[in-house]
Image (cartoon, rainbow, N blue to C red; front, side, top):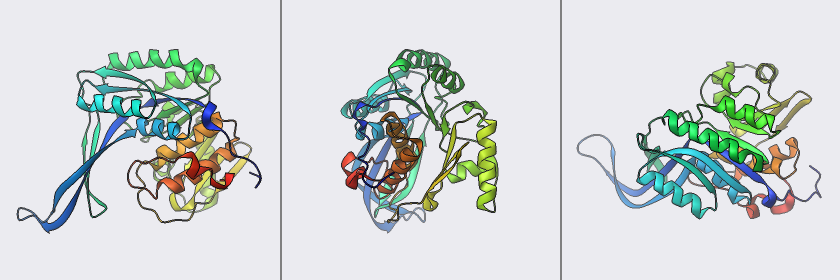
Length: 315
């Protein structure tokens, strides 16, 4: 991107997010002694916070940049599901949440002491077929109004119909960005771009001993899955975009890392918003890299705001 180019304007971007939502709960407390019952710290809880997690955090990141965002997912008919709806409303996100009385909303409870995460407790259960069918129908209804589709897979069962979603979106000429999970990427075939992190990519493609070997594995996976692009986020090494017409590597933004929770959500949300705002793939990756460098300096599943990202109008 040229040094004098103004930044994209996300305010007209329309993003449709679908995937696994969860409620991130944080209990903050003081640690002053070890338990007499076991060699573990005793945390005296002083305050708590609730934040949107998973696909809901992707939607929150996109909305924080100024985009118009709709979110589709399945939650339980419980207090946590109601809390997610309330938090989405506060962020001005259009929520299409299917209620499934047979499951509990996914919760990740983190206990924080002395500014460090001491423990995480997960509550989760996969949604049923009826709720997922309703979500797929809602996806098809909302698709025409979207500029970009983001599918956020956390492996919780909320994207059982992801192949159909990708096919519907591509037939409608909508770019589809997928944050993948697990070791079976065949279900993501035909997506516009996948955004695995380094360890996720290694799980699928195997290890590599050189940059050349990594490049070969990336292009091989991209071709096998008929992807337009593959974006591998590489932590302190930045991120690399692999396309048929070449490779773009963006080095990391040097700074102190405080918490990497939700950084992948920020990357795919920023990438989607920038593409929907008219930026090129290369420009969008640069903005996403800058956003990731900002968000890892914050605690928990945080977001990046336009005044932080666009300072200086260059990624």
